[in-house]
Length: 363
Image (cartoon, rainbow, N blue to C red; front, side, top):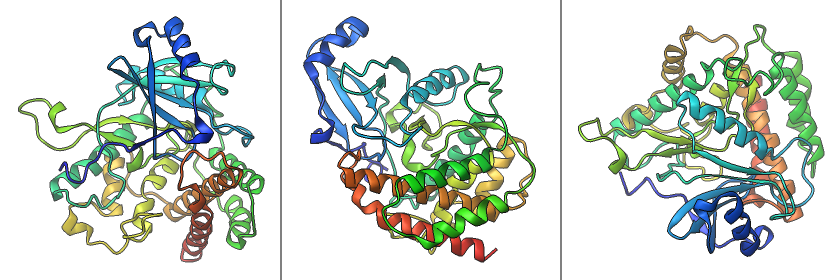
């Protein structure tokens, strides 16, 4: 498995995201003394929203996540919410990094930031999981379904998260939000986005639900435990060590999370910018088809596995991802995107919008 599971890639800190390590070290000495002393830093290559760094403090490692510099879209990059949710979820056995410290003082490194434990593990970005055995692939997909159902099953009111988001009409509010975000980051005309912004609010399914939702639940945001951390005598199947990137989490409709997690079934295999499973022999790979993956989630969540209006949720997920991609592209043009590959996201936004509209027309 080691040949296809790889450690998150680290790079030198990009110029726009440089940190004053002397100031940060002094701050750590007063607020996180267990990580005091001289600091060295590298930046995680992946991730398109909030810059994320691995800090080494005298042989101990922590992760720092901050808002990007520059002018930001309203309501975006809410790292304070990330810190709050991972703090709460740790008490409910959801696999998340340990939350250590939140700093809302912009004078320290230029933006608010938080510090969390470094979770050792590996990532798999390609949903086809090349090089793994069929059993390993099946175990990863089963684990994704189970963890998502576990998140959605939390009593958010009892967990003290009743104010973590509005309790009703999540899909309608999300359509309005991502329509506004798209318009605010628009760099050219995408006809399919205009059509979707008209069609989606008029076709929202009935039957509202509310649960905690991750908002970006996909394979690339999952850390898999290294094999040496699997308990002796336990099955060698991979397990999720941590779910990352909770920036978009809120109270919302659980089926939007599930649909987003199922997008690879609607994207073509072999496409590096939008990796998917369409066209792959998933049966031979040991990966459940979309219906089986949805059914596994539904069993774990205690709900019927027949979901009405499923194509709507897929279309919505594509639209939302298109809007997010457009925002990344706009930040790239401004020079404050978190990833060096952000310039590719303008084309990705257009392709997703077309896929979303084609999916709606095929209903």
